[in-house]
Length: 313
Ligand SMILES: Nc1ncnc2c1ncn2[C@@H]1O[C@H](COP(=O)(O)OP(=O)(O)OP(=O)(O)O)[C@@H](O)[C@H]1O
Image (cartoon, rainbow, N blue to C red; front, side, top):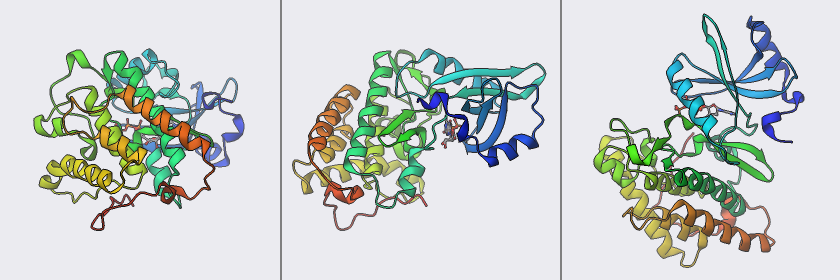
């Protein structure tokens, strides 16, 4: 069953309680528990009155942003990009507006990593990389780029086997007409080009950000002291760490992949297609091996002794 047509049983007593506190009897959707908040929106579990199906509904006082996101989501069609379901609005009641999307029951990848006892296994890391690199390949092929790839913007549709989608698509841009002005990429995931010029540069930004995401999944994302200087130097820190990992782990496929994504010179950086193909090749080899579930340790990566990983809790 696809999560965009979630089973009514995923509506719990907490959702029921929240729904009973709001008088939204005119709405086609009942509003359940809060799933998460972003800088400009709140996302709720919602239930369609007509058939009891459960989805996620984004609400915001920033209606322009919401409308922008809906028009982008509607134009996209890829198995690993968040699926649009519906748009709900009521005359004279802006707070009732909802962007209805598939409900990803596993929440976001950052929380998934933080809550996992042993960390993600090598196969799970590669599956996620194949899926998100595939989503980027699709976007880049349409002359677009995402601008804010990071674990918090990757949602888990299913855990076993892992199935993820790229979300938060409101800031997707066309490569041919990159907007000037503040860039949308989260500090830690900015490419060297963004930091040097303070603007987006294109598809290479996404691949760099996926490289930092891969480091996070491998528990190899360098720590970041939050000073302006450290933020400016952070791409170099990620680049250096990828180089050192490669030197310490010759022939390690996943390390090599991260190193290709974090090439300093954007012209030498892997494309999304190359990332997807390499990750698929590595996954094919890993699936032939019968390994136990020893989490991230099972990757067998040697780490420089003085390395401190970023902590998110
Ligand atoms: N479809 C969904 N299914 C399940 N949870 C979701 C869904 N959409 C969003 N969430 C949760 O809500 C959080 C915030 O959503 P989202 O990132 O889209 O908001 P935003 O306001 O666009 O954020 P940003 O500050 O990154 O621009 C996500 O990190 C996730 O935990």
